[in-house]
Image 1 (cartoon, rainbow, N blue to C red):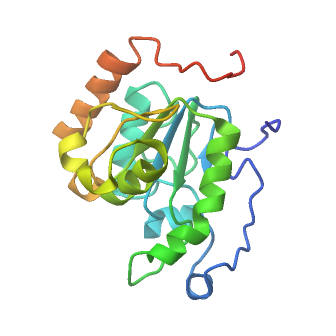
Image 2: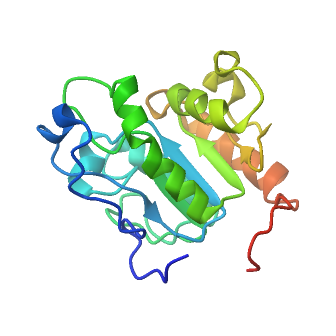
Length: 210
């Protein structure tokens, strides 16, 4: 665990990555993870929006980012206003399946696979207790690794604001941000406050003391 001096890319991952030549040729910058490197909660989205790419910070800069940032504030995980370009986060880390944005299409399966070592490294180093897959694709990708259920059995809309037991983690699925209403956001916050943060959600897996 490094001594953290900056919330942006705290593990010093390659910001000039060229594992996906087509993405590298059109991206503005790589958007690696951002937040508390010792956090117990990780939010994992599919890939940066145009605003997040411009900021270099996941889940910021547009309406979708403000929805996430508002949720983080209400859960006590952010000290900043929802429109902050570089939010002051505590006990939470934000990242993506794919760290580069193509302006005209979603990341391919191969591109997501090329980014998997970055995500796996973050998860190993942070060793979180709670993982929030944001949207269907993130939920299916994480389900492959961290649950015993078939990925196709998950539906982000139906599983939204619930808890799914994983292998060493709990997954807290969230609907895709494009479909997330204020009522959905409120339901997620209520579930986490009343059913997760209100109890001891920590697993027995040799975590360092806090």
